[in-house]
Length: 136
Image 1 (cartoon, rainbow, N blue to C red):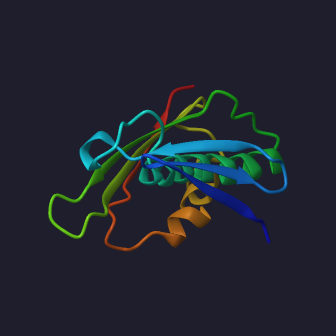
Image 2: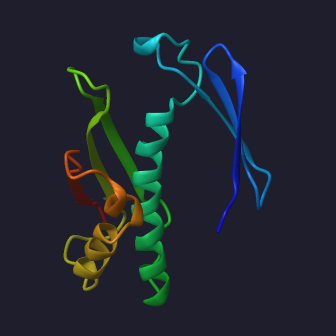
Image 3: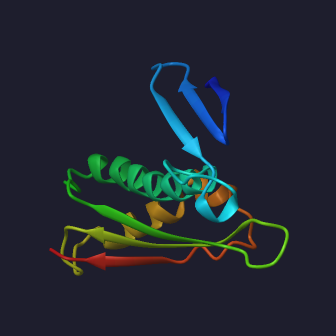
């Protein structure tokens, strides 16, 4: 179990603290929802979590097989719904992997990405397409 504490600072800004490490992050409401957009919005953090989760699970699988994924990138395009209720409509992600497309563990790594707990936690209504780009 992990404790996260979040304080509302006013003016649509929150500061969160990760209990185990005391690392902090700030959120702001986005420009299109009454905010200043000076930091990640809460829904932006879902996009960050999605990409980071897939890369982390892939990294765990890669370590087990002696594969170096340093330099792997996730780019996620988050789109909000245009009709109420306001929600994340899509999280389309491109994972760029610094390995050749014919890498013998390609299937293992792609399956690891799809096993990401964040993806498993998303509503099925969210378009969470994943594109794998092999660049090695």
